Figure 1: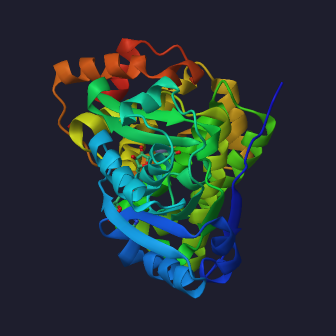
Figure 2: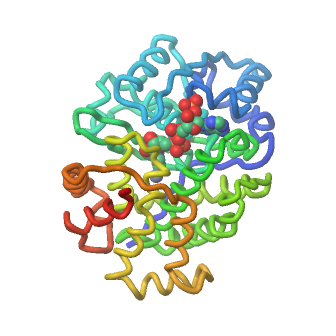
Length: 365
Ligand code: NAP
Ligand code: ZN
């Protein structure tokens, strides 16, 4: 049996926020606008959302306190502000960090629980409605039922999921992604690609998720030269935002695999941004998967029209040439932590501690 759930209404195109006053009006009377410290303003998305609120007589407050890879204290602070103000819906603006905080605030405003209890399936009451305005093209969080937080108690980043945190509407205006610098652009594009790739090869893959995954991967490959040279046009930005939304719908069905599990160890322990962590590990991950999944990867390379799957490894070696210092005892610990992540069971390869350690070693200086 296969299912495909995607309840978020996606609205795309230049100025789609300003043109969607009717949607803002019917969603609620008072919004908490949750955003990062700079991304809402730099991208221009915050101005547009405020204009839409004012034009439609909707009360709003801006909470621009979101940390990158937000932790439980940070999301609790955001939620407390929103809850005390008595808002009836949440608008998230930003990258995955801000969107995941917005989702979490929506849950904590209606459920009297501490953030760590989000991980115990303790969400009884429906969260507030969520509108999402992405300013990066990577996480797809605008169309997923997940939020990923930094959890000190678990010693890692950890995701929780609930279908009720699928945003009601996602507004995709590529002009907001134009203020990303080269690193954030490339890192987030790699995250989007890894969602599509991992969803494609996952043990939970479905016919429909493969369809969207392929489309998303093709767009990334077509955008490779622009990413490499950082010669971004509006068309490339628009395509990458679309691709990232598509791959978000993919992981909403399939979840991720060992690559994300390994990436969390790099982000949690070494502060490496989420997309870059995946990007750095990607080539070695493909090489490892290829040992057990030759036929599947050969078929994928035919569908992507790239001749051989090693082309993908090369793409990632070009985009992520840096090598980093990791001590060998840390590598062993990262491998053990990786094995505890639930996405390991969706990985179509028997990766043990030694093989995972080998993937980490591939990025060491
Ligand atoms: P991010 O952590 O949201 O943002 C990275 C940096 O980019 C921040 O400094 C941010 O500034 C800045 N930024 C964002 N948009 C910008 C813009 N348009 N112009 C200039 N700067 C901009 O990065 P992300 O990769 O989008 O999100 C990563 C998070 O999402 C991780 O926590 C990851 O685990 C999570 N994630 C969630 C899902 C999901 O389904 N929920 C899926 C994958 C990943 P500010 O600090 O000012 O915002
Ligand atoms: Zn990701």
